[in-house]
Image: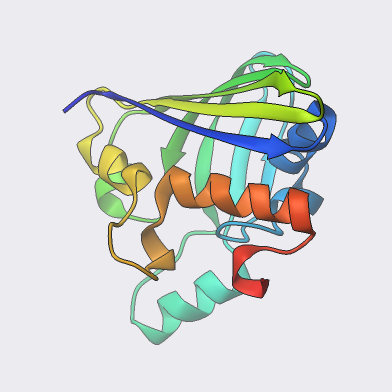
Length: 168
């Protein structure tokens, strides 16, 4: 199994709007796992995501702790609105939290009039639990483990229709 996973989707939206939806917590809390993500968009800047109330409630109801910070990392490169490279570590699960930081790259490229190709490349050497999580569940309807394919699909739905997949 490769340590590099690549996910690609085409979105009918300006590059700037996609960039904002990825990097602005007012936008990125609207889709996928609905947990706001915060970026300091300079080399060496902090990246983190906080648990939303639904995550906290689920953890409490199922008898486990949910950390306040569920993702962390560092911005390695920010070239708005085309390229973002960062480290990434999932802290919600002990198996992923104990692994090394992985490297996540977003690339937004013009693919035609008004259409952008969004590519997410996630390098996970030495992080097999993280690789499994980001690959996503193959089970239909399993929103708890949709991985990057599900996140990108939800981003596309939001930007093209104004609604996330659960609202469509």
